[in-house]
Image (cartoon, rainbow, N blue to C red):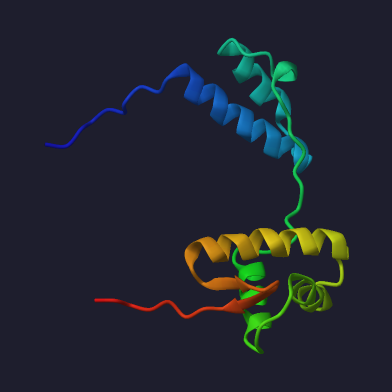
Length: 132
């Protein structure tokens, strides 16, 4: 049996969706903002009182840093600073201090997953063993 009606939305869902649309319109300087504001007021939300976080561009695309770090480790064990310098050589638009921090966050995540190991201040790629 097919349903011939839509499940009603909660007011909070509608307000959150309109808030998202409003954020996109403000960031991209689109027309029609007054209509979204009117809809928000209709649902009891004051548009100017809603939080508008600024959009910050990401330094690396999804999985890009991880690939760069593992690629740097292919040549053998390296220190964190050496890995950061190798990554920074490829991403020159980001300051070294920021790259260094992101590389260490990535390394500790990879260590938790068992893909790298830290041995005497040097990081090296570890091949996971399948024990079946």
